[in-house]
Structure formats: structure tokens, C-alpha cells
Image 1 (cartoon, rainbow, N blue to C red):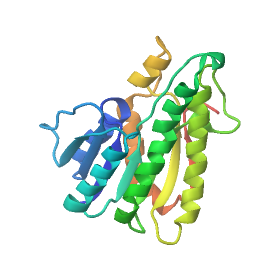
Image 2: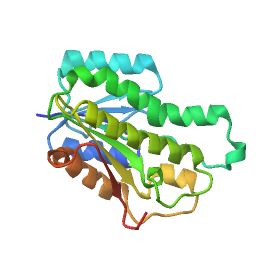
Image 3: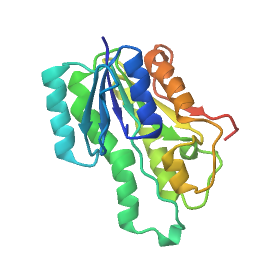
Length: 224
């Protein structure tokens, strides 16, 4: 059985990914700050986890070392968004978003490097707003720029580890009808559901690294 780690699993895409991987017979380590009802899910170990907390990441690495020894797939799904005018953003606001969307991802990957192999796959969940030339929205200066940084990080790490693995790819998602989207854009409803996007990510994470490495891939039904 392959081992997969998924961050940001309390709701939305992350929760649907946990369900999908569990149903398909994977060992799943589910990470989020909220509790998860594991009773109906097979082979799922949920850990209350804060990606911005060094101790959380160190404890996770210890758990992997003791109970799993290796990681086949890491899906960095956890994210934070704040929607407000640029002039109202504080330094603390910017740092809080980058802490989850970039710095926490960096720290997590570094701590898990000993447990990856050449065929392991790290999938960073980014945003269409983090692509150069895509449509941008007022109020998302911190969020979109952080996802742009995550995309560049993906490309650089793929180059740095192309000989020994793991492989790195970024999926830049369009709008998905998740609690995060509803919080950022109250009243807006996306045409893609969390379970539909989770199904796509599941298939890509499992087989995409055979073809792609270091790629930033738009996943949207509309043009950027």
C-alpha cells in the first residue's frame, strides 16, 4: 500500500481527497487544524496539525519515521486567503498568508525529504491567479502573489531534485465551490465541486509524475 500525506483536510478539496484515497486503498495521513471523523474511513490517520508551527512539522516527521518509513505522495493543499483592498493590508496579513501558502510548505517538504524516493510525487495546490498573464482580482494581492511564489518554488525544486527525486508539480486551480471560496467571495458559486476537483487531483498525483516534472499546470474550464 502506498502512503500519501494531504494537508488542509478539514473541508473542501482536502476532505474529498482523504475520502478518495481511503476508498482506493491508500494509507492516508490527514493533516489539518480541525478534527476529522476517521471512523468511516479506512487506513486514515488524522493528525491535528498547523503548517506554520515548527513543532507540528517535526512531530509529523517523527510519526512518518516510526510508522510509515516512506512517503509516495505529498499533496500540499492547505491554503489561506484574505480578500481586502491592498491599502488595508498589514504586514501581519501578508506574513500570515505567506506563512501558510509558502513558508509552511517549504518547511514541510524539507522535513519530509528523507522519506521520499525517486518516484515520489509532491503536488502543490496553487491558483490560476498565481500564473503570469492570468486574470487577476482586486483584493487578492497577498494570496495570488503567494501562489505565484509557490509555482516558482515548484519549478526550482523539480530541477534541484530531478536526479534523485521526488518529482514536483503544481496544479493552478480555477474556482472551486469550497468554504474558502465562499469566505473570500460571499455569494459566488463556482461550477466545479470539491469532489470533482479531488478526483482530478487524485488521478494526477498518482500518475502525472510519469509525464510531468517541474510543471505549473492550469486547471480551469476558462481561459486564464
